[in-house]
Image (cartoon, rainbow, N blue to C red; front, side):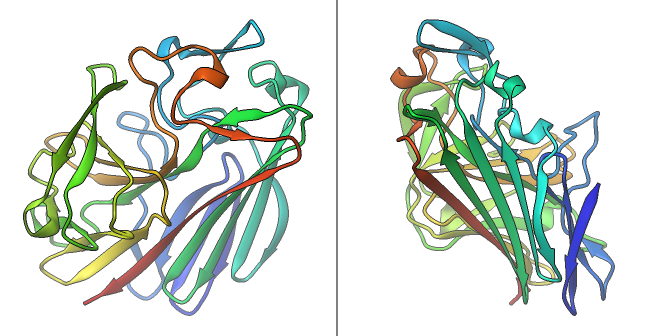
Length: 293
């Protein structure tokens, strides 16, 4: 079931299954900015990630000597979230732990996801609450896929991803299975722009602590853009896919990262995870802006 909010320009839909954005529609032009999914390519649109962001070594974790299987990206994107409140410019959903979730993730928790539409901005907020009596370990974040191209009559060669400022990015090296090594590479895109037909994003990049506050996906022919403010997320994930026929650009603001290739299976020994004390809260936030220059 989808919920909607709208203003004079945009209609935004949110799917209760997974609490993911399902549509960002410009009512005047009929233009859909969000990738609409394709089971043959990638079935998701804008999944909410919890309690992991990327792949886990062996697809499992351990806690207190017990082993738990964990799907890639976590389980929040696969479950129906409950409606908390809705009005013309806001949708709030909540996912709570159940005996079934505790069978793969042994904590009592709640994840509250809120979307707000104001002007040409869509605010995406996540609050994670630990209702348990013990420290909880997790990752969380957003992964949003935008149509490429999004302007009629253009191709991927007409699009670039511009950094807010010129900088040398710290790129985490990945092995063939998508796990991180302990090596990083410094990469400074020429003039602060990554061209989508360059192949640089074909396999996905995990960027650690970029200085830029936003990444701007824009059409050089029309000057129209989609700008993602990552709100100081420790990792940013970028991928243009599928190779050779790029129909979407994924941008993720991640509070966590894929496992290291030599990672421990134990939750409390993993790197790039958040530890949250009993009855504490954690916040993640990103903002989507749509405009033109």
